[in-house]
Amino acid sequence: TDHHQCGRCDHGYYLDDTKCLGYVGRCEHGQDLEQGQRTDHHQCGHCDHGYYLDGDKRCLGYAGNCEHGEPLEQEQRTDHHQCGHCTHGYYLDDQRCLGYAG
Image (cartoon, rainbow, N blue to C red; front, side, top):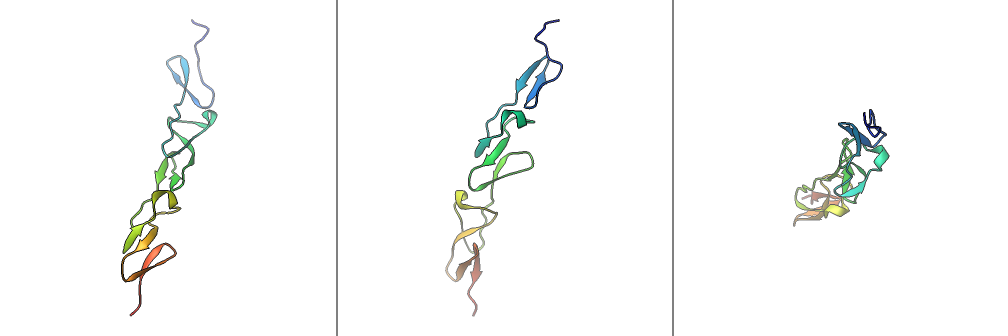
């Protein structure tokens, strides 16, 4: 047997036949997770503004459905469905569009 064969790999690497290969780090909308912390390809450690880290360590954008208005720009969101502007007859209150009474 070749003395460069692996039976198991360090954290952040996986066994491919008899070689240890590093999980690829190409985090979309964020920064890559450090090599030694990865358990799969393309995992993120931190997300850009407007995105959140899901259970699979991927950066997903906060949804932007704003009833009676326009959603905040993606990079300004800190939660789902936040409004930035309201249509006529509605006002902005805590990033939601509420109707005027009367």
